[in-house]
View (cartoon, helix red, strand yellow):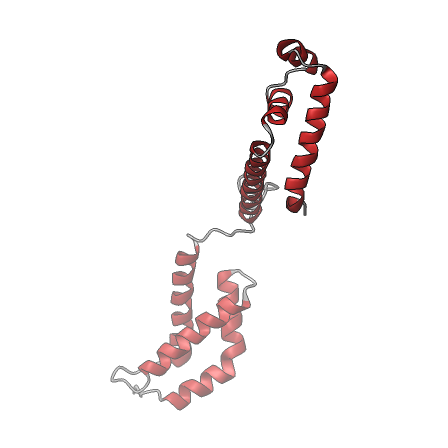
Amino acid sequence: MSQHIGKMAIAQFLSAEHERLTGYVRRLIDDTAERDGEDIVQDVALSLFNRADVLMPIEALSAYVYQSLRNRVIDYLRRRRNVVSLDEPVGEEDGPSLVGQLSDTFADVEKEVTRSELRANVFEAIEGLPDEQKAVIIETELNGRSFRELSEEWEIPIGTLLARKSRALAKMRDSLRDLRP
């Protein structure tokens, strides 16, 4: 004779068997994630309470609960198969993790942005120089020309070119002073 299982009977069973049910689920998922095991047990318990006192009786509560847990674990493992752990190595066993690669990428992007901003500020500082000083900086630092070449081409003494560059660098240092960390 089958009988309907009431909410009180389900509650008593779940309370008495909670540790065993959770342990069973943890063994099935072969994982130390306590939260996942607890979540699956709670999910099955909730569905049992929603089903209690319905027209279809549960013949053997224990067997029904364990089969429900097993089915939920299978569903859990199917969903989990598509999840990529960010902490696991990518490629080689000892290779960097996805989190490590992402943080390295963000660090590279941040460095590139900082470098780009610094470059823009340096060029802005160069643009703010008087024409004579700007020309010496551009030719010696950006175009790689020597003071001797410039002296001969421009017919200006090397000492004058050195003084212009010195004054230019001092002005640039002053305009870029706020950028220092």
